[in-house]
Length: 250
Image (cartoon, rainbow, N blue to C red; front, side):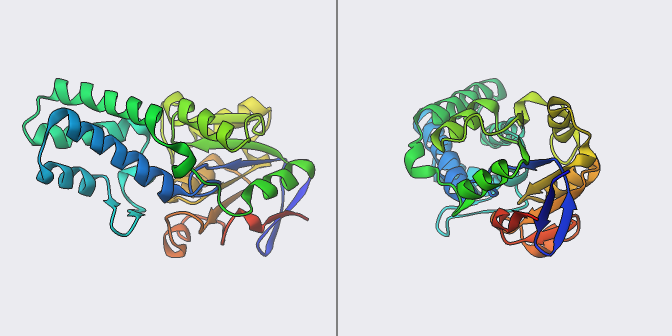
């Protein structure tokens, strides 16, 4: 079985399961732009005032002035359906009937997916593409586990020229239980014909490293290239590294 050096540790594993945003791509750059686009669309359609816009921004944990997203908020931790529900709840609290709010939120999410300028909003983290190539060439099998939906995930991978690089992909819209439940890892492990103990999980979020532990992966690795800090990740990760560039064949 191949050996992988992760920071100061060496582990035997056959596969590496990676989170997407914050691990491979710049999380805040993409998801701040995506959520502000959703809010812009809703404001244009529903003609609500700045107080409703402010409530949506606050509820989603966005800080447009600083370009930041709350690492413990819904955008960082929750799957798409939960985010849609949060949007709808805010609109309902400000006088828009639930059925109308839900329909408009669904439209806004779909339209933002379709019209956001991905070339400006999407960027891989420095050196990550080259590191993925190195790991593949060394014989490690790659999988992806993301709370994003499959449509956007496929679009992102295509834009980054990574389509076909991942042997198995689990997305938030194709599981019953979101992170930190182990379902995503169990799904990709089954697709790869491997036991979870022959995989490691690598992610920038608390729910990523919790999921790895819950699934019984050989190692659950927290990376500091996304939103969560070392103190947050340290409660659940077996090891913390600055980025996935600290993963190398041993």
